[in-house]
Length: 191
Image 1: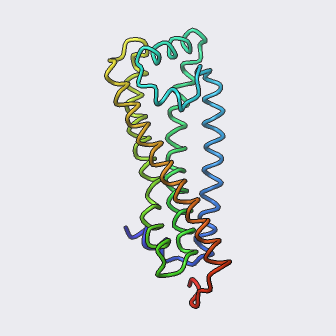
Image 2: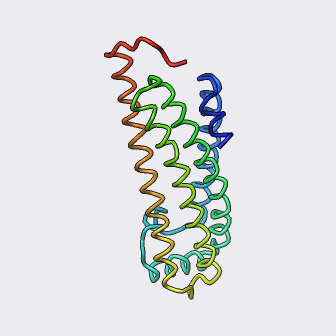
Image 3: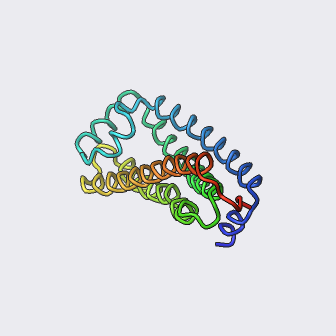
């Protein structure tokens, strides 16, 4: 909580610099993750794979990578995903907090923006749970318990839900910021 409050009370310049650095880390790890996923030759896009709720298909996809001799690369991808998750949590919190602070001090957008700054960290939390379940599936790629896919895809769906909420809020917050700055005169500016 102390780190969260320190960041929220930091100057706009500090918040902007930290947000830019976290965004750079996010894009770097995203590139590494996408590259590793493509090299693993997973036969479907990750969104389809993660939300399939279908153990038979997952086992077929795993069998395909085993046949292609790329299953080890897929396991490596899961580890890279943990680095990506950390950057999602940091970037999500810092950028959303920074955008919130650009709004007026007592504004609705600032108040709720601070709440929505936890959307991507929550997405990251469910991504961690999803990955942990995937390790049980990877351990027995063609014979894992079918019930694991329900848990795996549920965590993935919740993760994508928080991503959607976070991105929708960011868009709404940007629109609100533009309208506020262009069309509404605010006497005290953001400190």
